[in-house]
Figure 1: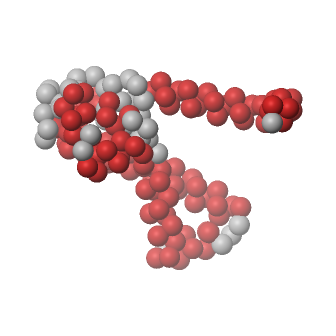
Figure 2: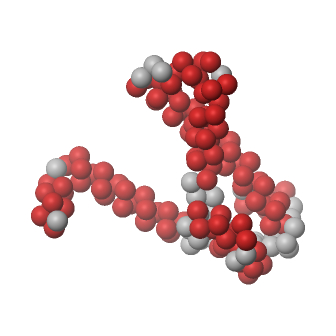
Amino acid sequence: MFRAIVNAFRIKEVRNRILFTIGILAIYRFGANITLPGVDATKILEQVETGVMGLMDLFSGGALGRFAVFSLGIMPYITASIILQLLQVVIPRLEQLAKEGEFGRRKINQIARYMTVGLALVQSTAMVFFFRNFGAIPNFDFMHVALII
């Protein structure tokens, strides 16, 4: 097994992909530990330790409990992908794109990425208003909320 890893690093493309993946994981773990400014993390942690919020914290890699920079994790992308899968049945143009092969898959992936950005904005706004109800965001003005989102 060790020899297979060494051989993988000899191939430039494989080495670059492995190092890129390790780099992205390191950046994510770093961002998952940076708490957003102006948030009372203890009140959020109280909410996250129980019920459904604990499950959402699990999907975000523990970042939700810290209300960190990467609190949403991959949830917006997964949601966008599921919505697109369901819309392929309803919208004929998307169904046609799905059947067009590589070009169609690329186009659907591009649409999913755009939807991810929109869903991330919606989900982050919903999280801010949700945690406001528990007193986790004491200074609730426009600039502060915009900074958190």
